[in-house]
Image 1 (cartoon, helix red, strand yellow):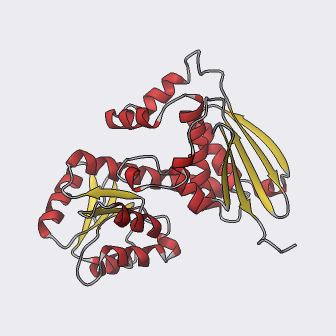
Image 2 (cartoon, helix red, strand yellow; image 1 turned 180 degrees about the vertical axis):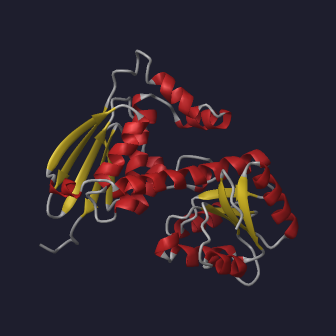
Length: 305
């Protein structure tokens, strides 16, 4: 497996020309690339000791083992559960995308793809992966006595505070790695979309221009936003942990974001709320005008006391 400064990718495609083009684009962008000609070859590579990938770029239609079959095998193993899979397909119908989403593929490319789109989607997947790994490292450093907390309130403003708090609070939960992934998304949303008023379209344009983080930093200093805070209330009982996140923004229409729809599958962002709902929490409920969300983690199965 080659090592790249930007990350290591496994690309899986039965067409040699596609493998060649993908490898060229990704190498030029600084990625390490390992190529497999079908799903079975990719599965063999994934199981080799020492191989570690930041993402898998997966074709859907292949001989021996197709993309959906490989995806099912990957997501069935705990060590690959959070490995980002980018599905590349000529089948752009909503049903085929929905099938992939339900199986655990949250990133998409349509054939024929453009270089800039390829790099944007790959970059988004690896960024999510690295942020999750950073949170896991932070979790290992948290004090176990936090599980003694029964009630607490936290306030913060910045993205750094959001990441640190998500790591801290996740350490209270039975599956901290999964909870941290969803909780960080909710806390970051409360800052950027809530308090700072960056819309979905704004973020798309800022990411495309490479200016998203700069815009966040600038808005944090502006008079209209600099006093705004995110409030996080935590309650722990024997049965569950309830985390209520409240921002000081104008709210938003949250309902469309609870499901990760095929229409947004090809965007480099916009999957955080649906991933949090499906992967991280036993219940996720937006309230009022959308500037407050309740996330619940169950500590005991229902009916047990």
